[in-house]
Image (cartoon, rainbow, N blue to C red; front, side, top):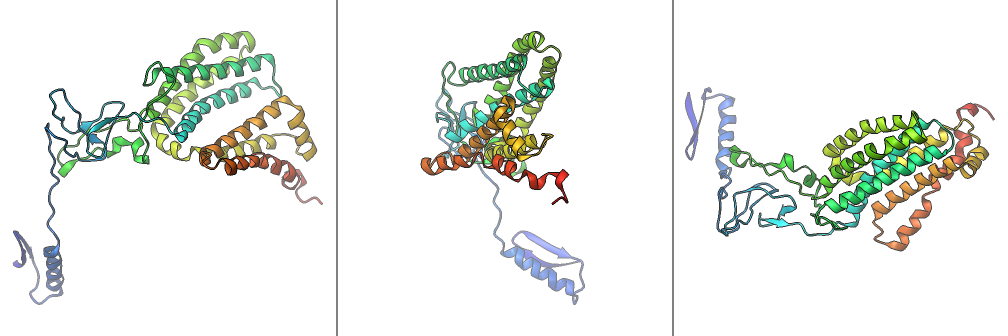
Length: 350
């Protein structure tokens, strides 16, 4: 073994033939390594400090203590978020219009699933008194849960919310951004950087579940025995599913929910018409106008589509974006007008 290169304090040695090609390649590699700048370890103040000092990672911060010093780098308390100087600052911003639309979407999601389960288990082609009572009860439960969520969120007892601004998708997943400076010790800086958009949804689902199991079973037994109880049991399954989906995909849903609402509303209204046994254009148009259940379902899809458009545009240009709402009925009209070309029973006919 002969030493082929020496760079600062590092020696590079290899078993090679003095006249071989390996020696030439290895010498070139040694020259490149010697030209690279030296790597310095990341340095920061690990303990308390009398002045503000930077912390590693995106979400680690320092808390001002009673003695005037700043704490070691850690996660900020609930309702606080680290700023540019790595100190934990109080979140005192108002939720944006988009934030409010997102919270409305998450609340509306459980309500729509309630209504779907009630209608599905009722197995009726029209609205009866018992079915209407169940629908109204589900709406009342969601409203009560929303009011309770607002009152229990900071500031407690007020119908307003103070929040941290969402700056990126990473704000929803701080658990995967805990830094390990110099690969020594991982700093646990997991926090609710989007306070309170993440925790509010969990609180809403909890209150909605409590309201449902408190009120709905009594009304189900009285107005829709058997079938109404099945809707309650189904809700006991989809609530944990909603909680799990929000826990894992909250940031993704926050980003794509306007587009998700518009796409799903178009697909859902097409499925509604496709389930009709009579696929004639005149019948679809007449049943949509004359039958209350069909009218409510179609109008509900239109409202969802409009909700998605408003969330996407945020009405930053009121006149133009308001005119876009005129396109909401277009998917329904398009289906009814073109149904004769897509009816499987007419395939191959002239």
